Structures are given as C-alpha cells and as structure tokens.
Length: 630
Image 1: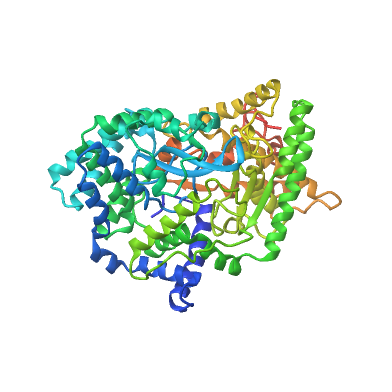
Image 2: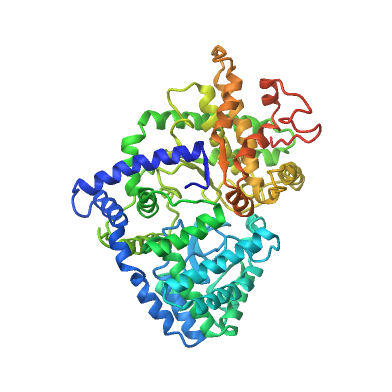
C-alpha cells in the first residue's frame, strides 16, 4: 500500500506506530476537557469512527454545494469564491513567497515574508486552480500523459455521480473541468522556472492588484479573511491572474458552477464516506503513484492529527521519544559542520574576498533549530467533537489558515516551525536563514547517540550539510544573511557559481533512471547541490572531529571511511513504483533516491579512494565531468 519503500519510509512507519500509541492512549485516558491531549484523542477518535462518517455521505458538503447552486452570474461566482476561501485550507504552512495561494477557488490569499524585506510578513496572491499535479500534465502528448488525463476525466465523472449526477451529465461535467483549467495551466509557470525567486516576486499595493483583475473584487476576500487592504502584496504570477480575470466573465456561469462543485468535493473526498475516499485514493494514489491498497485507517488518522494539530501531538511525542542528550549531541554535530563550512568558504579560492566575506556572514547568521519549538502552539480556540470528523478537519484547517493570515503585517515569529516535531524530514528557510531538524528525523538509523561518529556523520551529518547547502544553492544563494532577496555576489563569482551548478544540471539531465526517463536538471539542481555539498561537508567535518583521536578500527571488513559512505547510501536505499517514479520526475525538486546516492558519490574523490574505484567504473564520473561546489 506504499508508493515507495526504503529507509525513510521505515522511519515514517515507526513514527506512525509511536503516534498511534499516543493517540490511542489519548482516546481512553480521559484527559481534562479542553487539554491538547483530549483534543488530539477526540480528533483521532472522530477519524476512526468510519461508521459515523459513512452514514453522513456527502451531507457535510451541502452548505457549500448550496452556495454554488445559487450562482447565476460572474458576480455570484466571485462571491462564492470569496465565501469558500473563508473555510478552505488543510492546515498548510502559509505562503512560499511565490504567491501560490491555497484554498478551493482558482485564486487564493496567503501570508509570507516579503522576499526583499524578510522582517515583514505580507500578503501573497496566487493561483490554485489546477487539479492535476502540474501544468505539463495538461499538455504532454506521450501515451502515459494521455492515459493520465483520460483517467482523470473518469475520476472526476465518478465524483459527480457520487454527488447525484447521471453518468452522462457527470462525463460532460468532467470535460468542463478540463476546459476551465487548461487555459489556466497555459499561463502557469513550470516548476523549474519557479525556482528563480525573482520570477515570482511582483510586489504591489491593493490598487495595482485590483487593476490586474478588474472583474474580480478583492475587497470582500480581504475583509472575509481579516487582512487589511493597506498591506503590501506579492503576486507570484500576474499572467495567471489576468487569465483568471478573463475567464471569470468569458466562461458561462454554469461552467464555473460545475468547476466549483468539483473543487469542493475533490478537496473533501478523503474525509468523507467510503465511496468518496476510495474514489479519491484510486486516482491520487493509484493512477498517479501506482499504489494498490489504501493505508490502514490508523495511519490515515494519525497523519490527519499530525497535519492539523501537529504541535499538540509533537509535545507528547518528543517527551516520550526525544531525549535532551539527543538534542545536545545533534546541536554539537550542527556546530561542527558550521565550523567546517566556514573553513571551506574561507579556503574557496574561486571566490573573490568580497563574495567570500558575504558568504561567511550568511553562514554565521544561520539559526539552527533542533527537535521541537521553544514554545508550543496554543490550540485553546480549536473545538474538537469526537463525533464530527469532517467538521473537525474543516475547523482545525480554518484555525491553521487564520493563524498564518494573522501574521500579515506583524513582526516575524521565529518560534514558528514549518514542520511538526515528529516529521521525518528537515528543511532550510531562505527568508529566515534557518536550518530545521525535527525530532522525527533524529532517530536511528539517521541519528543514533550510541553509534560511531562515522555513521552519524555519514547519515545525519549529510542531512545537516544538505540543509546548510541550501543556503548556497541555485535559490538560497540569491538571499543574503538577513534572508533578503539580494545579489551579494560579484558578477565574476556569480558566473563561476552558475557554471558549477550547470555541471550538476548536466549530470542529472543525462542520468538514465530507466525506461528512457531523465530528471529535469533545472528542477532538481538545488537538491542535488545540497546533496553533493552536504556530503562533502559532512565527510570533512567527520575528519575534523577525529583530530587528536586514533583512526577508528576496521569493523566487519569495512574501514571507517567505507562505513561513512555506506551510512549515507543507506539513507537513500529505496524502491519506487513506476508510476510514482514518473510523478516524482515530473513534479518533485528532489532527485530519485537511488541517484541522490549514486549521482552524488560519483563526483567524490574521497569515495573513490575509500573503495578503490577508478575512471571507467560505474561509480566514477568521466574525466573532466566531476562536479564540485566549494
């Protein structure tokens, strides 16, 4: 029932099992009413009560569907889009600085840091009108893409039948969805193009926003979401808004009604009765990722709690599963890698003194976050009913949305995290210039306080270096020490950096991942730079940690250096279903796991020395093709 399986998936399963024990205890422990433990227990219980969910069918959607049924004009369409924004959202993390708003409608409003003034949270306006995973899914003519579009039409028609339409009307409605979305897809930037933060920065005031869409009144939306019209606004894709404005009046109101009905049911399907949930699974996980079986209900419900009340769950989780010693040791590793990167930057002869000084200043300004937030989020205003799962998800989602929107116009809250503490992942934020490692990823085999240094540096050390490397990848390198979008490079140094990044792009453009498929090097270059720079940094930090210590012994026939590289490779040991592979290549900025290991190691002379590899071997790049960052 998985689209992929490997080390990180095994860790995620362990996280879910630990969360399950916490949540099942919360269901039966009868914690005080209003407490976080009571709320996460009640939310989990409401999700597990499938009999009650199935009994309700689609009735939880009726209020929103009735709104849509009353549409008669373009003005009515705009009013319904505004009304749906008030309750839309699935507990996201706010804006990404690109203005790609969330919600049910074709446009959305979110909050995020001003890319050129990181101390200010502004409004982001962007498009959210595509149902397929990416714009290219609407236009590619290869057999697989055509098959996916046909499967989507069948899926959408099935949803309409579940809402009560006849099969004939449902099939026509599905075609209407594609007719509404395809013109929007035409003006949506591709994922690789959006990697350039300058391309998604168009700051303006409210009057300029209104001029972009003269047929859509933004004032009711701002009022409905309690966002002042005096705030600064970033529009990620102005051409998208212009096209939306044109379609608002050009399309018949009936087409908009059909599309909005679809978006309502599509956004809610996983939280509705079994027929809706199964239909959504068959397309979203089956067609797109090749998964054959749905996950166990407790996995789905645990993920729902983590998504909606992640810090409430995380507070209990870290108390049970993340020790102070683990936090201390991880912080020590982070600082050793920072010191090593400082040495690498200072020794980078290809950088001029001015750029080198700016790079070191940015590194010194990094804020590391380890394990969990210093202060836990207040969920006291969230109301949870153990018998109303859909309403719980809707209301918790609205809380998350309002929490993010309330930041607009306020000072940046550096206590906030973009991931929940139990998450098996990590991230770098260019606007905050921070590296974040949730407790969930700080578990064996990535991080083990009882393991040898070579294993920890090869695994979690490479992750630390990877996230630090994002501060200097194709995107992060465009932000300064304060998190502002600003060119701090000399023209000469920037050209040298782009040439080094170009080597990585070329490598991943040419790697054969099977069936003639390739990565899009421009899409994955940031993550690939993070991997290469991160592992190189981790290896040097490991060697730095050995100063004054004897070389570790050979164990089971492997030297310490070999164990270091094996620990790295184990992180990325993974298998993907063929459909999941295609989806990742089309939409994901991360290379396929196998090549995160092999593609990275092929560039490292230290790896060659450890395993006595030579030119011509599969794990060695051809002469003159080695990629190197610092």
